[in-house]
Image 1 (cartoon, one colour):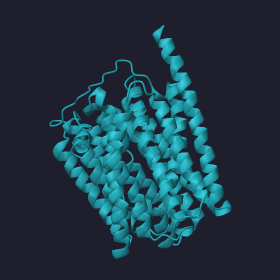
Image 2 (cartoon, one colour):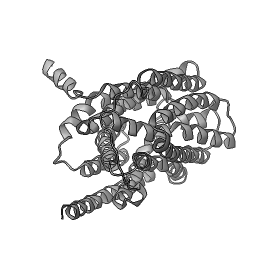
Image 3 (cartoon, helix red, strand yellow):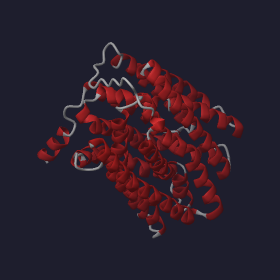
Image 4 (cartoon, helix red, strand yellow):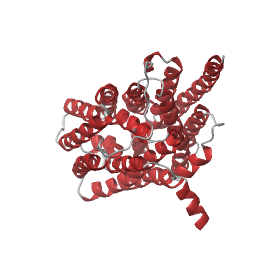
Amino acid sequence: MKNIFRNYILTFKDLSKEVWWLALITLINRAGTMVIPFLSLYLNKNLNFSIPDIGWIMSFFGLGSVVGTWIGGKLTDKIGYYKVMLVSLVLTGIFFVLLQYVITFQGFCAGIFLVMLVADSFRPAMFVALSAYSKPENKTRSVTLIRLAINLGFSTGPAVGGLIIAGIGYQGLFWIDGVTCALAAVLLLQVLHPKKAKTQDEIKVENPISAYKDKPFWIFFIAMFIFGFVFLQYFSTMPLYYKDAHFLSELEIGLLMGFNGFFIFVFEMPFIKWLENPKNSKIKLVAIGLFLVAISFIVLNMSSWIGILLVGMLLMTVGEMIAFPFSNAFAVERAKKGNQGEYMALYSIAFSLAHIFSHNIGMQLIDKFGFEFTWNAITIFALIGVAILLLLIKLLKKEQALQAL
């Protein structure tokens, strides 16, 4: 047992102090975003919106994310990641608190758009900061540490969120979201101020390449959009499936979703350390991860046994454990030759764009055809993403061959 614990601790070795602080800020911030997993339930139960209406609201959620991520990337390249992260955290906290007072359909569409615009401007700035604070050889593990923080936040968030809903109602979630954003901003001021932080990997590109002219990166972008589209079903349509098809309560849904974050927190870092090998293609690993996420949907149609929900969640969890760190590491690596903020924004936009279509299409499919048809369709779409990633592997090999000449 001591050796297992010692080996687990060694997987965190050599990560910079700044990366640890960035992880803690992310943990505080993400632990507070407990409104998000319950948003579709809140809109349905408390505001009495129909499932198609919820789908449109989630599209505005995604649209705000796209615009915010694009603006965040542009601002990061112009004024630096620190200012972008600080302003994003402060404004997100304020807007989350105000969002609880919006009760009309049109108002909520506008409100969630604005919240996500300021919230997701944080993402490209954070990725560039992570790249700057990480040594080149530690970037994948640094990304994994940030994901551990995110998932620890998500594992505690839904579980605590379920208790808060049961105790004081949904309004408590909005206040906690706002307060935690403010706390993350205070911590950022204290520990990651440019005068205090030490840059580990200064990347200077004299003639930066635009991410928008990088054809392989666009193929990667399409695959990440598909991955995001499929993965995000777990945060909108899946809670409704748990409630309507298996009659789970909010607390039970929170605990099931919390299992995802807890499993990642315990196993992801040693798992990534084991997979992290120069001989392993990052894109091939991402393809394997997406394949596992695809299977997590189809198994739900194979049995009405309640335990199948845990099987599906486990498959999805292992899939995202592989796909997210290595896709992120590929994007960071690719960004070294161009405008970093632009590259990381485009990577994030793939997931933001998925928000626009994923929740809405998922809701509409469920409303018209039911859960079983929807899970079959999602599985097929995910497998198309796997095929695109396999195509990208061949394209990257050709690119490397041409560079070697």
